[in-house]
Length: 552
Image 1 (cartoon, rainbow, N blue to C red):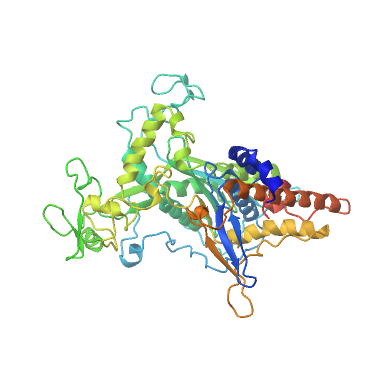
Image 2: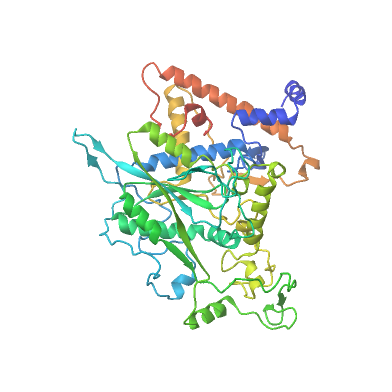
């Protein structure tokens, strides 16, 4: 950066430069790397986008991720040809557990008989197709509809709600007796927090992904074809997770409701009703015994049962019951979406991805200081249960319940599981927020990202402009098969070393200038190519042209 540019940049505070970066779609938290060119012996500092999916951390990266997911959703929803599964993985067989199931389920055999309190599932002959069926109207027009399904969990207790109409009674206020307005911060918080079932709410959140797996398996068996889906897990205002799913093809509405009613997931884990350690009655935690190579009681020195031993005891008990059963709630929304209804498809895609940039813990707002006391108390009580409940067989929280976690060693810290499911930001939902079946588009997310760049490259090429090589500094190999470019992250404190490192403001300024140059070239290229014909088709991107220009 020359002296004039540096002097100009110094006049603007970092906040102004950051706002300008957000406006131009530039990452505001770039990760600095020093790139060495082994052929020339030179090096340069390169900023790489942080890739955050949360608006609170990096708005441009979160928006780029959201638009990429929009493209992925739209491209697979109404396909009329069979896609191939991504080359790096095979699709999950319909009648087999998904990869998210516990490894124990493949070794320990349990009865597959359905629970007596669960409805039976209809039996339909399976077709291997993944595309939806077509329907011909009397006027000869062919339609290929698909579904937009919303699933919720059951109630854990009464929550504050808006006045609602009850047949024969008219408008009825909230159970607390108050007619709340739409902006009331009390909405969706418990009416009586002492009777609200926070433990079950926490367990349902921790095991919600498994319940979704079961629903998809059951839906496929009852649909008669290998239904593909693009689903997003979001929190409701009461902080319970719910699912929005775009499903290719259609299944009868009554069948979907029957499948949801019959779907459940049983958690066959050791009992973890009440903590035995790290609680008010026994604040001490189990300790690791180097001689025994196991965790022991801190007072008696007795060995804690291993994970396998605890499961053996469970298998040996003929009266054993699952530690928890997760079920879907009765509120189910089903909408039919027709492929040629662009407005309705676009609205549904936007709704599906609307809150991808918000963390579960940001449901009431980004700033905790701005939360209403009722909202803060509700979140705190839910987090208190999520924090101490086990999230997996390997979870360190098992030591609170007197069981050694699976494959535990002396490095496990009792009661401190590293899984993000336990933190306040996720509130039990530590897995992926976006769930996509492998034959939705037949592409990986990286390939979808490359498609967006290809749209820009074609537009620039049509106007005679050569697109800058985004992989110019990739770890290419020279004739000796040795990597040409070597990337090394810049560690904190290196800026005080003898070699100058660009400041955060300078990195942002350079990225903003580059982005503006790219966008200008792209807009000019579109203007040059528009008279003879339209730009290359990119209707599947679900994005506007300006946002597509930022994909480069």
